[in-house]
Amino acid sequence: MDARQPRRNVVLLCSDSYESKKKAAAFVAAASRLGLEVRAHPDDKTVAVLPASDSRGLDAAWMARTYGVPGPDPVAVGIARSKSLTYEFLSRRGFELLRWLVPVCDRDLRGSFGGPVIVKPDCGTGSSSPQPWGYRVFDDLRDFRRYLYREKLLERFFATQSTRPDQRQLVMEYVDADLWSVGTVAGNGTAHLYDCNVMQTLPNSKVMGRVLLGVKHPDVQTPIRMAGALANAGLRRSIIYFQCVPRNGRLYPFDLNLRPGTMWEQAAVRLRVHAYDEVLAVLLGLKDRPRIRWPARHIGLVRVPRELRRGEYRAKCSDPSAIPVIDRVRYDPAKPYDAGHAFAMYALVCRRPNDFHSRAAAVIAGTRLERVAAA
Image (cartoon, rainbow, N blue to C red; front, top):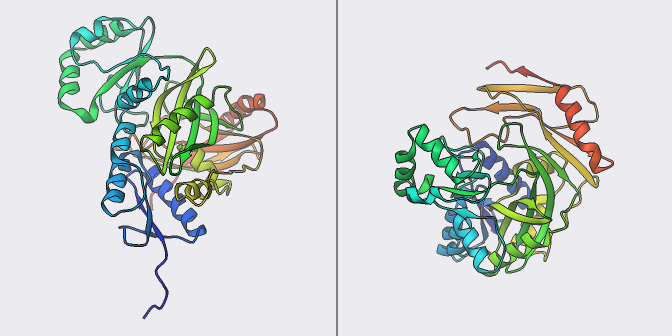
């Protein structure tokens, strides 16, 4: 008979994506270092139910509520899972946002936002959409309508809007600028910053291609206050990670995640930065705020662009200073949303922020892919 006493534990919920499973593995390692076991189902020693994917956030909240485990209010998670509800919540609390609209009839697309717009899914995150209009940028609302009419998609679009809530789209002002990530973690009320970085997407894509750690936007307090408002409304014991776009010195959120950013997480694991330990300690109420220490003040992360093809490849870079974060890449066309490991990725220690892009370009030019033969 095993005489060991049961230990406190956490339950992790992940999706079928490779990225989600990797995030779950990072949580498992952090839980082990904090002396916690990991279970598939709650018991009387469970202290948290954690989602390793945004798609499992509401499942985790309901499971915690059902079994009396401290966690976020499912209603607050339901708001956070919807971009439109999140925007509405923040607007009602006095935060300034970019203009946005959930079109439900043809007349909605005959107005104007006075500039470019982007069409994107209301629920869920990522960079791919099952519909042809998803994640596309148009000159204005009327240009989007002309596209739908020209491609004979107008009727299909509004039918999808009314009958497929899982694929409902919203339209938002589009700002062509580098993006900013503001990651916070909330314990039982206050949201604390754990990371701020600036990002760029891959060419002709919505997949993130470059991230520079160690920089902070002057308006970083605005998304932190937004996260605090959500935490106070019930999004407790949660990661609240905003992706923002800058305009006129202000940061405007366009997406909210309930798990860490993928490139950030991959680099933290590869560089042996116990970032998940710090985040998890705050989630469990063991610490008031996270204290994450990277090996250098400025670290750049770069993905190597490529044409996505099925299969597995090994990446080799000629730059000896480039630290491989992902050097075995894989892609499954059946899961276009699961692109976190579809690109080679390297970490670069930078003396100055301005060094990053020239060094990133050299890494991209010096990287080659070799196909890994199937076993």
